[in-house]
Image (cartoon, rainbow, N blue to C red; front, side, top):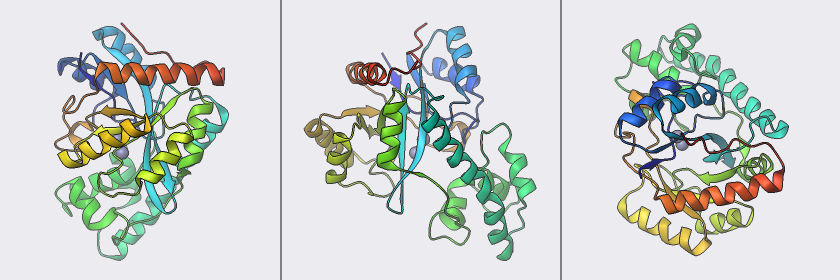
Length: 290
Ligand SMILES: [Zn+2]
Ligand SMILES: [Zn+2]
């Protein structure tokens, strides 16, 4: 049983339509795939139809942009009711913030001689729920300014780089509460990837607030980091997950199924999702089993 719990479609910053992503997951030999676009459930309906067609189990999720102090933390949410008003409002605020910063980023780029316009960026975004930095990066690639998205981020778009603009993200603790209120479960994505914002003490506190798991097996984590996080998950009774964080052609070395979640860990996660759904009394999306 091969389970990949973190993938992106073109509704956020992946390159495959949700249906194509699900088809690829099936072709890659996965039995279970979660679709987790950034801050939106807009990809779910198309993914559901494709999952039923190819006969793969679909976990409906999203990756929420949160912050702890000034640092950014990604929170995976599985099986939340996206119509739960406080969650829906938070997601709308995040998407608005992402859309709204595009002109400011373009202005900063232009001030430094990089000729990328808002129109160029919006055109690159295609059917995404929000236009964001990955699309700015794509416009920069098209203009010949950089060769890859990674280069665009590292040179221009990341915090501390010349064209970085801050935006709204939900406070992390609040986001965990919103996901629980929506009857879903939350898992911190790649916690010790590019930066170590979350300390073991933070994770312990978040576990007390209802955090269900930690993404342990992720391409941004070395073997040593994975071992350390796995131990921490065990100590804190958090579910360790493994995922590709696949973005289609938008991110190299994140092939579907390159990391997977053991079936017994998915089982634990689903158990907690069931408890959260019962406590919230929301009509939450079920695991979609063919
Ligand atoms: Zn992430
Ligand atoms: Zn992701």
